[in-house]
Length: 206
Image (tube, one colour):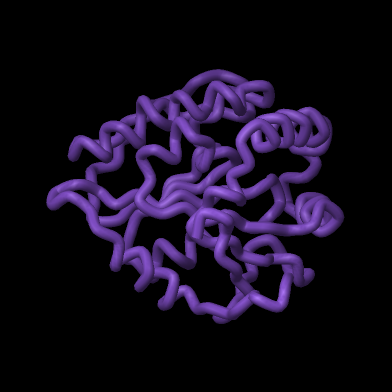
């Protein structure tokens, strides 16, 4: 991190989000993006608890190992646009074990909703977000976290292909430069472990 880096708590980030203006009756949607293994799921869950908000992981409906780009459109159509319009989100869960779509799920509107997953901050989705967080982690550390996961045996054959997809999508429209806040998660930790205070820096957009 640069000399301009500071440290924040989840309470402080939540306060910044609450200060954002929104239309009455509309959900304020917080996006948490980052490359696979960055630690965005653990961060999003802690932030959602601070906001008393539901937390949705887009892994629930990404349509398979080659479907990352398609998932951004599904995120907009099934989740972000309905919530922004004051309607419930409704999506079809993807069964990763069978490789087929599964049952439908629904999330009513809420004051705050946290949505996390690879590429949730791409422009088509970011247009519906009230606040965007990018979780930054070095590639070697991300890979180590992935290999330590309980589901690595299942993920491993697809890891390189998934990485190529997310790298290409992010390179075309770098989310970190447009995020409201960039979190440094480079300190070696387990994927879900987050300290109460963490290093942050404003993005170029900030």
